Amino acid sequence: MTSASLPRRPRLLVVDDNASLVDNLGEILEDAGYHVTGVGTCAAALRVAVGEGFDVALVDLRLPDGDGTALAPRLKEASPDGEVVLLTGFATLESAMAAVRAGACAYLVKPCATQELLVTVEQAMRQVRLHAEKHELARRAQTAEKLAAIGTMTAGLSHEIRNPLNAAALQLTVLERRIHKLPRDGQPTLLEPLALVRDEIRRLDHILEDFLQFARPREFVAHTVPVEAVLTKVLDLLQGQAERRDVEVIREFRPVPPVRGDEERLRQVVMNLALNAVEAIPAGGFLRVSSAVEAADAPDVVIQVDDDGPGIPPELRERIFEPFFTTKPAGSGLGLSIVHAIVTQHGGTIRAGESPEGGARFTLRLPRADAGP
Ligand SMILES: Nc1ncnc2c1ncn2[C@@H]1O[C@H](COP(=O)(O)OP(=O)(O)O)[C@@H](O)[C@H]1O
Ligand SMILES: [Mg+2]
Figure 1: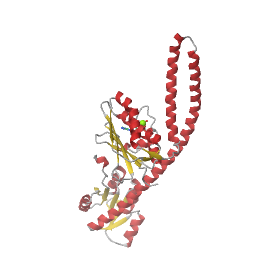
Figure 2 (figure 1 turned 135 degrees about the vertical axis):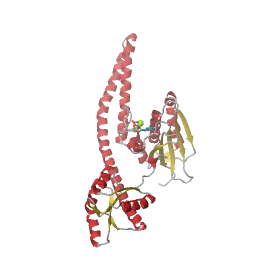
Figure 3 (figure 1 turned 135 degrees about the horizontal axis):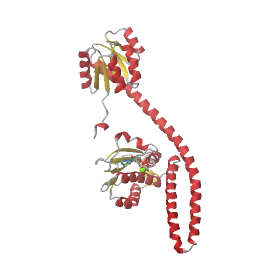
């Protein structure tokens, strides 16, 4: 496990010009699992807030270069998801009101008891986590909206391109027929470029098909689909390509119950994942596809597609499912967004991670056919 996959420690900022108090609080809070930065002035606090940011700031009311109640809103402006707790010398109504006015979520009276300190910081952290969840929800809503807009545009454009493309393909057939009527020895030089053009048209047609699939995933009638048959068919189709690239294909199929869905679409899911793997693996590498259930009564069938290629950096593991995200010079960036759409349509989930060998691992979970409605 890499450190990037561990949850990061919450960052606290302690602002007080009493150095021994800062040390003291720092020690207690570090022991409780927080990462603490201590500073003695408003200016230093703002530098930290703008630079690395903070989750919770504990701010003294009286500071050498200013006042805690004036500093609090500026800190929140610099680090909008953070929360501020004010430290005061006296428990008075004025202190409480000053804290509320400054936008602080709580105040602590110095010297504060360890227990009270920890509870207050934990409460502030709860607020911080709520902010983060709210942002995540907003981000997802925005992505969904973007997808819908792109989908409509893509579908329109694909249809517009397909019509002239079909007309060109038709004329090509006419041309071919006419060439065949010419003297034999002149035919090859004419047929050769014609075949090239036809291949290119076919390639364009496939790309358009991808776009249309993505834009308008067709409704499906769910059937009972045998998982092993899907995996076998895809890997058989891929065998030739894998051999040419000197990639070993490993099958680790445990007996699993059938899933509910559309066999052809599920094949498309596995094909896209396997093709990506084959494209990523250097010669001599492997592609491993496995199926299993985690327990006899587990509701999902788990399919894993592993490789020993370069893997996917943790910060890209969500983005690769976005439409048009690609790191390949000639990629469409649609493969994984189609995968995501189909899997979601099946009531399943797909996640990108790291294989034990350090390459990519895609974990696909599909509801078994005999689970629920
Ligand atoms: N097995 C894999 N190993 C490494 N990177 C991968 C793998 N599968 C997908 N990716 C990354 O995800 C990106 C998006 O994949 P995809 O949506 O299929 O589009 P495309 O294949 O056209 O780039 C790829 O460009 C690549 O960066
Ligand atoms: Mg792809």
